[in-house]
Length: 320
Image (cartoon, rainbow, N blue to C red):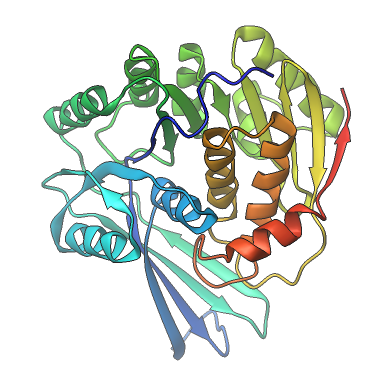
């Protein structure tokens, strides 16, 4: 398909309305009642868009990370991202940035995620972020909108964001769920990347087989959306554009961590688009990045070499 941008000419900007300090606690034994003794603690600046920025950097690209940050945790998130080499341009708000906690017991195969909703964002702070996006956006830029919305941010937020940047001839990639996704689809982003469950929620059905996913992708494309990539966890992804629909299946690997694999996929998509890859190559790279992510602790701290080694082993099959 014909790409809507000139390769390497624009910037990638990730937008994270609800970032977090992501803390993983590793225990030797998980009990339902009583004390859990923590053996190891890992903490990272996180939230879907921040993970995407990290994935882009690990692949060899650059991005600007924006969104809402606040309080001491927000300061820590920005400082940590800067230390990783990620450029930041956030709107600082009165609300404190949230914490998300994962408790993991490898011996028992247990992984529990405790996800805070975030604190209230004020209307004027939402408008400040929209103004920032308008000032950042220019032709050939790629904007990546992803993640949950914090309290106080209306369901039409992503729709407004997408319309804002597309009016400046930038292109929009979207990874969201629920009402924010269904509302944002009306703005016709260039690419959407929900997972299988999120897509089914949007269409009001539970998919029984891949043929139903293919039909949903065809409906999205017929509405004017340029591309759709539907992630399917360890099974890979199904993606389509005007040229056809493909299934990408990754090789089997030993799973260390599942946090951030969808974000790694989205980082692969953004990087592939920026660097001028074909749609099939984009799909293949996204699945390779998502698979490489499960090999290491922490969201999107994978090795570039691992991604391209897996890339060659991803099986691509045209299915429509």
